[in-house]
Image (tube, rainbow, N blue to C red; front, side, top):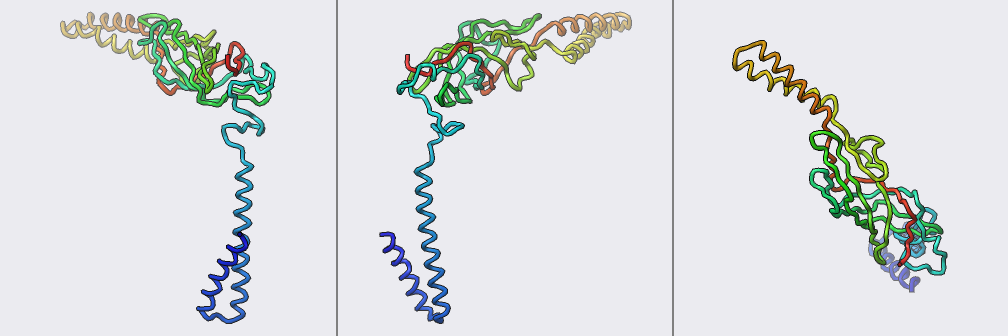
Length: 265
């Protein structure tokens, strides 16, 4: 069938060339080039078909070409080959805002995995799985102190159902409102106010304290009021912590505390 199609196409081109009344020498070159192009196009198409059959779908191809997305079944493999080891770290993305000003105890939240969770023997859970959690405790910064929030992760949604998951927040990459090295046992801790914040508060306090003296045209009272206002504002701001504000889309790095078995219960 393929040969017949090539012959048909060549015949069409030959008739066109004859109508143009080309010299025989040119006709010979024309025939050779035409057949070469037709045969080359056929070979290229056949090669593309072979390659397309050999390509492994993206969702089942691992780093070594033999990884398999889990479906909840063992398929004759040992249970251990479906365990994601404790200590495994992976990135997730917040699906809603988290704030120590607005969050309350037992409030639910969701995150979505940005990386696959790899078990043994090439088994893995693809990225994009939703993890459900709740706020187990929250502390606002208030007038003094430092804001803190405790996040508990409960279940991870897979294509074959929910699985229990035990994980903690290991870090909040790129967020400078979080105190460096402050995440212990899954607790996210905010920073305290900076010296710049305290200095700005002191300047504002000095201006407020001096207002009354200026109104009374008393230079001494104005100076004393400014000094007292600056001191009070500085001490208050220096001890005040910053609230934790994590917007939707913020990346969190989680760490598994227990093995996660990628199997149906």
